[in-house]
Image (cartoon, rainbow, N blue to C red; front, top):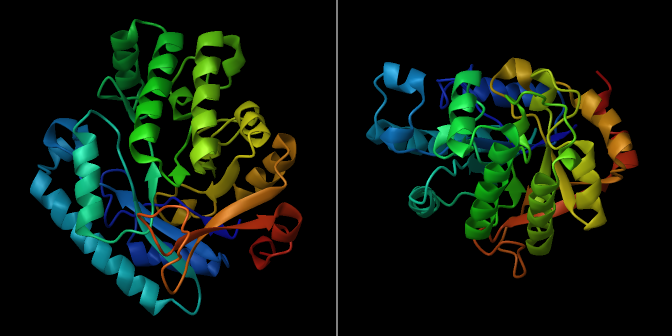
Length: 311
């Protein structure tokens, strides 16, 4: 696709990404992308550091310094490559515990970010996509079954949605990644499915977008996030979709987007949306926190004709 709304670099996400941010942007340009959103992770409290961050003696202070360096570099790259690609500067949130809201608000206050990706990577404060062992720990904390953990995940997601109303909802069904059966239909669990539909209702009501996230494909799944059964329900609610590669280095920029294009037909998605930055404030901006950010649309048939696909 010629758009991605979710990306990371090894420069500012060294634990699990690669390459300099400029190399990532240059790769997007080489692929003839039109819009590329930068979304490095927000700072977190020390109690929520990942194992490799603890091993590297990461500190909360350094995370805050890293965010400031990311902001400066993102603006430099946007200016440098303005004639070749449209760059929006955002960040990806981590919704972990009640104090997460304070950290997110601090990031929004420190820099005039243009949007953020609303994600849940933890349930009961335990990472659910880092590795299988941590997933099992979270499952045990939820009562010992995938079904109970899925219910708790979508409850945590609703808390995040209500508190923050993100323009882009990240990898909506990430919870399936490390589960016993990542391909399982959610409809097999009525309680889980009810919570999914409830969350979709809320996102559609405030006007958020679900990202079609191709990372699920490179991690061995047959569908992107979210599954087609979820996409069809969101479409029934007049929900909007954007596109993301969730890249963690140059080798993942635009990866599997051709497969996502095929998936659009399976899911019945005929229109996609993307973020664009206005030169001036928009009086009726979709989100008053980001007065220059607007949501644009493009028919899939028109999207297929863009230069990205001729490579």
